[in-house]
Structures are given as structure tokens and as C-alpha cells.
Figure (cartoon, helix red, strand yellow):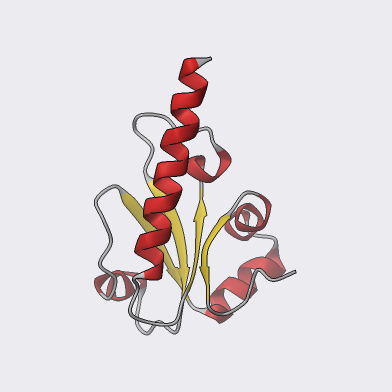
Length: 113
């Protein structure tokens, strides 16, 4: 049972740290933790997957260059329109964000229901 408590504490720590990071972004953004940390099935090799939705310009590599993120984070930079298209298509990223995502910041109010 102690292992379960340790894993729960580790997940909460990662969510807290990711939330601090997301709130520190110097631009309007919606940030959602997805993947294994959001679902709770992470392991030692899991990275911290975060969708960041903002008014990005350029290709994904250019977008990533605009974001200072910690080691071990996997950032998925999307525009609001790109995210909406994913939702319309039922894409797995959008589905996962809705089903399991942990909202870290929601300046665009995408996840208000």
C-alpha cells in the first residue's frame, strides 16, 4: 500500500510542478497535462506530456523554440484552430485531453463545461 501512496504523491508533485510551469508562460495559453501522468499509469521512463494551445506562429519546431520547458517535458504546441480541428475529427489527443487531461491553465476557456 505504501507504493500506491508514493505513486500518488509523485503524480501530485508532477501535476503541481507542471501547473507552476504552465502559469509561468509569458503569453496567453491553455495548457493540459495528458498521457501517463494524467491517467496515473506513468513509470520511471515516462515524460510529462503537455498540450499548449496558444496563438503560435510557424511550424512545430519554431513554436517549441518559443517555449522554455523543463527537461523531461514533451510539449505539443497547437493553435486554437488546430485544437478545434482535432476535436472535430475525434483525434486521440483531443479525446485524451477531454477524458483524462489535467487542466493546468485555461486562458482560452476551452475546458469550461
